[in-house]
Amino acid sequence: MTPYRVCVLGNSHSAALHMAWKNRLAPEMANVAMTFFAAKSQLMRHMTLTNGVLVPDDRELGDLLAATSGGLRRIDLSGYDAFVLAGLGARITLTALCKDHGTVAHGRWGEPDNLVSQNCFRAMLAAGLADNIAFWLLDRIRESGSTAPALICPTPLYSEIELERPFMRRHPRLGDAAFRAAVMEEGKRIAFDLAAAHGGEMVWQDESTIAAPGYTKREFARAALRLGKNPTDDGKHMNEDYGVVVLGNVLKRLDALSEGRVLARDTVVPFRRKSA
Image 1 (cartoon, rainbow, N blue to C red):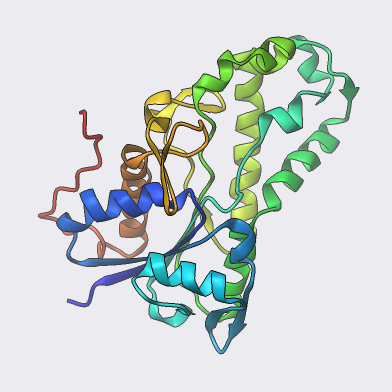
Image 2: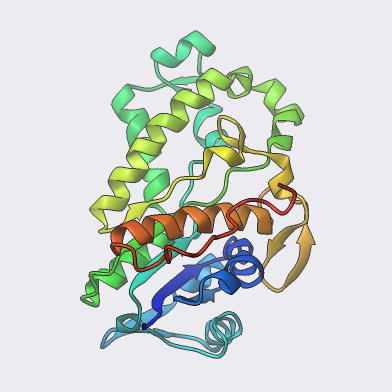
């Protein structure tokens, strides 16, 4: 049987998925071929769609694509059964959005410095979510004529260690889990609508990785992976265990969309963490 071909387009956050695939999932899934193309977000926009092929406009981007894909410098969109867009700026940034602005309804968690209407706050959420490279790449995929499934995996939420920063004590509303949960839920609805409008689908961060509304469990941010760099504990990037969870959900969804082509019935995929 011809392998189910998945193209992953991402930035530094795709490193966790790449290593999870290489070390943990690929050995169990011979019927799936997954190719990664990754570079810094600002570079990923520097591609031109030519006859269904994304061609890098500069050498640095071409070199990075080749390094992550195993030598491919161009992305022939017709050669894939599905696309995954990982990271690439698709996120809800709670601190930037909520530390100074809020609605009348948000007043129960503390009066905002700048009061805005519910429609205005929703528009702010939507603007932040819409400004990313993931949607730009998805638009190029659809312009090429491809109707293949396209799943967006948003940038992971910051590690819960951020909750301990002095910044949070200076902004009590952000420290309130109920407030953050309300904003995240509204943002999630907007994100799903935006993804659908661009011809894709959002695969939200799994609840098993979330410590508190808006923040990832610190265990997933330890020794986190980045493209071509040493592991870090920067609180923003995630590790291989996180990548396993994300790819597990991606593969399950692609299996449903492909009517069973992805997960062979006799295959047990290790979607659990190493420590489980």
